[in-house]
Length: 148
Image 1: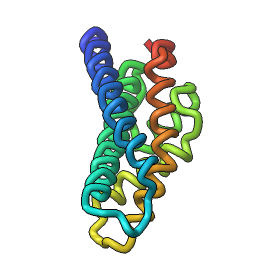
Image 2: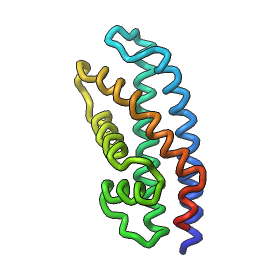
Image 3: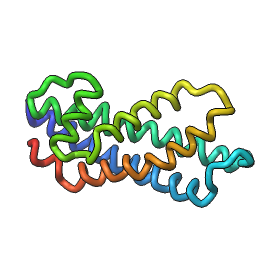
Image 4: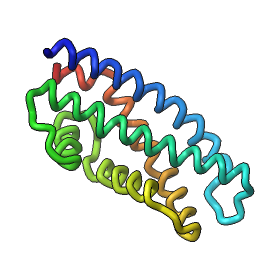
């Protein structure tokens, strides 16, 4: 059974790395644009892509990769906060609090309908994307191998 979860983790790691590369492209583009209220439609589209890609990558890391690592470590998957706290203790991420903020922002993105708060979301995504990408780098560099 462990072999199945090892294969699943490898699949999730690949998906995570692919999603990180796509997010990095949007992040670089949006950093050059800058989050501001006078964005034109093409620039807004770029930021919408950034927020969607940020949400997708955060889900891959938290909901798939960290959950599968918990299964391999014979731990109860627990709550999202449990998985994040364990990831920090194991060195997969630097700060549990940052990843809680990433998760909360992901939820806010999924439920945001007010245009007056969208620029705040864009700014926070720009601020937290490097933290998310650093977590991906730590996981991909083999830190997660210690749990296998």
